[in-house]
Image (cartoon, rainbow, N blue to C red; front, side, top):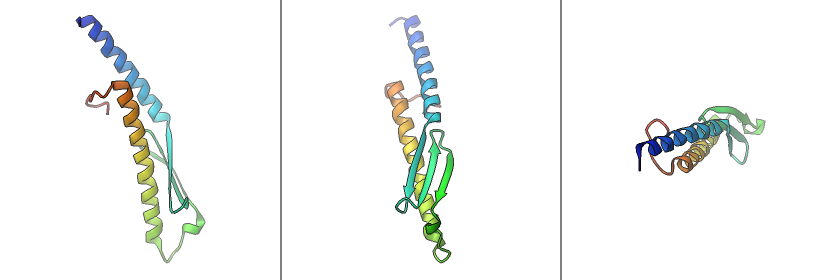
Length: 102
C-alpha cells in the first residue's frame, strides 16, 4: 500500500473518530435502582447530569439504602455510557486500539 493512500485512510479514520466522539458526547443514558425510586442520567462524556429521588425512597431510619440506590443507579448509567462509547469507537476504528481515543 502506498504511503499517500495510507495517509488518506488515517485522516479519514481520524475524522470519523472525532465525529463519533461528538456523537457519544451528545448521548444520554438513564438508569434506575430500587424499582425506579432512584434515577441517574449520564452523558456519553461520563458526566452525571441528573439524579431523581422519589420522596418515598427517603427514610431517615435507613439512609444507607438510599445511598446504595444512588450509587447503583449512577454506576449503571456510567456503565451504559461506557459500553455505548466503546461500541461506537470500535465500529469506527475497526477494533484498532489507539491511545488517547479509547
